[in-house]
Length: 73
Image (cartoon, rainbow, N blue to C red; front, side, top):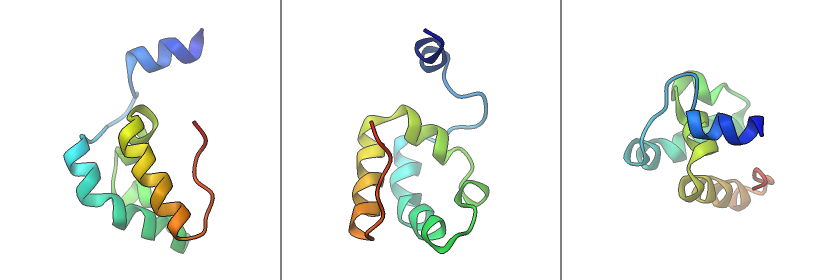
């Protein structure tokens, strides 16, 4: 129930939109794979990926291409 409520209320912090996500997703994944903090470079990306199935699928695909398991669900 708490998970459903959290999804309905949205993220607590900043969140970017799909257009910005698309523009920054490659860089976000590259930073993540390098061990850097991608959320510091692209604030709001993680929140967007958690709430947007389409962008999360693109993110998982990029991770899979790099040989890293993506997020579930």
